[in-house]
Image (cartoon, rainbow, N blue to C red; front, top):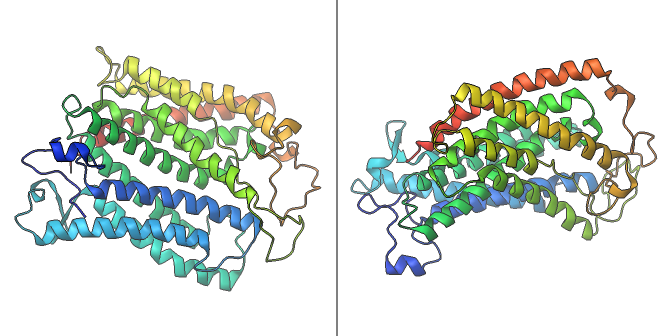
Length: 412
């Protein structure tokens, strides 16, 4: 294993040996934590589809093992990095590390990853006890799942910070291949983080709610914050003009591809009652079309953001404009697409997954393919709720820009 940070004498220098090395001179740790982030989202999606298709799982069911692998990889590589910096007083990277608890030295990314890994592994026996005591989960955010999700997002945020510290120290003009590799690691880590955030919100953002203002309020709280932070954090790389578009594209693939693949494999319920007898895995959900509002935000940042534009707009005004643009584009995209997914027979196929249905749900439910009356709103009520969502999106975007400014400065 290598240190998470480059040598202080020659940050990210591309020698003849590193130019032929698959790591391109980047620390192994940075690849490991992004791989851990990938394992986490894949295991999480598999676990959801397992619950939809099979039911009860054990402590060491296959989806859980995939998530544990992510926790172990991030914890071990990050722990090694921290211990190496702590006990090697002459380590060249120690000067750029963070001291915590008065004893340990390490990068910010490593600290987040270690804490996240510990939370994830702690949640495993807690979740097993919860199932044995209370039975099958009826919602995503049970107490043990909350601990698990917090741990997951800490690991994934640690991966983003680890990659950003490399980006903020690298010389793009001198090392274009290395800069491109860092760019890809950033895209992947950001996309995986966005995917877990979406899973966290998915109970409130199903297609059945896409014609209700609560759907857009939920989106306004979460997405402008994260997407603007990603866009601002990437501005140190002047070549990278579409970071939000790229991250949202990875998110869409990360959510969609497992739901296209797993239904190819057989699965039968092992816990009753069985209202919908199935023979194969049931898909999770088609992702939100975030790549379209993401592209709009990229164009906005390229034109008006500090670090991109020659005459940048004040961040307060930029946040207000970004929140407004995001919500208008998101509404224009998701309102018709949500209706298509929920009501159109053309969406009931393997690609759009609208025919996916949990084994415990009645397949003949009258609102399976039409909007329930409890989501009905008058035009005035929807307009009021959507107006609230716009204001929330502006605030969310402003916080995201502040967070992105901090991430632009991360070098440890």
